[in-house]
Image (cartoon, rainbow, N blue to C red; front, top):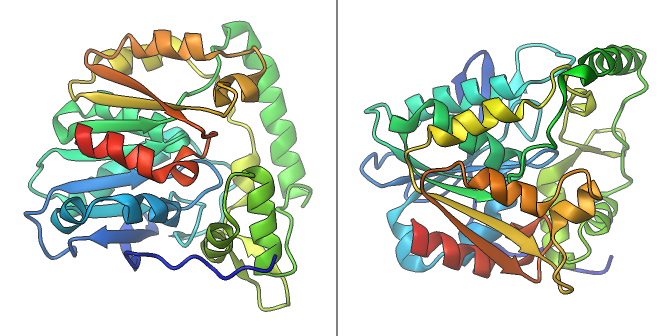
Length: 315
């Protein structure tokens, strides 16, 4: 790849905070953390991603919005630069909810409601949190936070057996993440995952998505244990109950590619459809649904200006 790395319009500030036995890394833009009066927008990244992934969104915000907001994007435990007190062999959504609750207590100790925006896994977590802690959330932006296909109780024994098998493979060293020769190779992998990602942005993201290991290779900043399947089934009725408990207005944005295809249908191939997801969103008392054209699942990378226009009008 012959490209220079993207130059951010709003440089990322980096710091760590201690909570729940981890040192959580935060990427921040906008108003510095010392100004507690500025409205807080917490940006929640997806699976196998990092908080810095919201750089292009931060750059697309208008000057007025960026200068008036505290924007904070944590790295979930097991991702990015967040550090844990010891090794683990699997992760749960419950830990993400606990970490988010503790983070908001640190960032907004007066209990004032905050805005949450999440992509994919982060969008799903934002929705669940808004149902569990409605008094803590002012507005929710859900970017392709679809959740998972509905599961039947009868699938539970096989799921638990699969989890046990994957745990065993992890501990046998059979579940590592592929290393890369250099930052350019990492950037190429990011573009394989998302061909719409420009080369300069891919190279910039590569430096946050992976790091050199001191032995000549670049390692993805993600714990291989994240690839171990959850032992628990996705419980649709519990999720819908959380949706019904949300009191904040919700903006749910999904992507449509150049042929009008949605990423959910392309990913799940009929096991879970956009129509099913939109039906789930009807459980949310106050939900605005929007499509972002010319984008795939990483819509905040593909069309940050379009995403930001929706967010600014909503927030």
